[in-house]
Length: 612
Image (cartoon, rainbow, N blue to C red):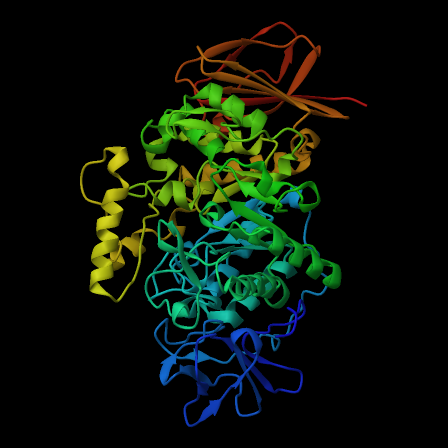
């Protein structure tokens, strides 16, 4: 087998410039493989390292096919399209046929990313890529710079969060398939939006998972929450690693995706001398050199291990950024959220202050929940390597009833939590709908066809909430109503309080983009003061030309603070308690050194001074 090509696909069914179909599949134990078309069967030749291949003019884009292995027909593990779902035939798709018009697009700097996480099926009433395209102007007006799409790899049925995908290369048919995704990305780029795609490399879903019948894609060396681990370091792992590296390169090269968000990389088990994430990083760097374009790799990881986001040449895995759940947990507890389940490790405002300073709350301290010392130092790591949020799909959807912050916190506290994210020296992420205080829940939903699996999912969901001491029944994940209930309500956009919250978010994002002290993600140019008794924070950030001070009151009472004495006068920049934001009282437009400043309950005040 030739070396991995950075420039084109080498597995599955691809079409070269002459229109010839290049077919290649890995199945090291097979004795005979053919590709089965509607009216004919074409045998494949055996190559090195367990690969089988064929070049033919008998396959055209749109043709449906299966691989027949030792007489058993199976869909293509590297299929780009599954028009009849996970159990149906694969469809030949020419990934290079799309007429891109985004040649002028250049990926924006990572430090300028303002993420908007959305789920294709519930973001709009129609639930397709085309429907997302119709709302891009709304997102641009909001101030978003990058949409982050929850996984689109083909999953069973038409309703799923996306983490049950079983065809990593195929784009969900009910969303619009591969061409629909290409069209959406093209439109985003032409409107100045970057596109982040959520991908899952830690497990395959349970239904329609045929890859194990081709080769040793799984290993019993390790177990994950979803069963046997993907084989990244056991016998046969070279080609499994190649499979996922090809997937990464395909999204960037053939779909023009700007960044990948890799789900739960802590569940990737790999003791190879070179971790799979490091190898992915190195291959992406090769692609960037050849294409002269920038791509980013963002990981979800709960290990608090800075090695993941340390460059390869400094001994790390070379990921560009990571989701930082601990900022969310500390913020939520500070805001008055319950302390159960994984929240028991968080103590409120002192942990939030810690998160502002260190990104990780646990960076070498003892964790009661884990019963061990946990985390590494983040000293010297840029703020742009951490993504923070007050809500995301996990933190909303993994609640039993899927309640958003709008159902759990007051309007004032929602505003304070949103601003807490925006003033951080990290990358901010919004979860779809939070910008207008969406009241519909986001619940867990699936559309499996196996009755025993459906029962197991229902049972598993109930078990998940044991640590949260929640009574009652979880919504049925299989029910269509659970999915429909989770769709955004676009009808309330011009109603109160949704309209006010939307304008509030727009203003916050403008501040984030245009105030130098907020825009510059220098963690060194920041000080954090905390008062546990009053549940308040004072955060100062500065650049060469601006000083900024933020007063955050998480208590339900008025609090008084003394204006610091390092600058004579501060000019008000932002006030969440102003009546125009449905707040109780506006604060003074100018404050001076040493004076007492009253903070309204559940509010944030920003004051600034510019200097030459």
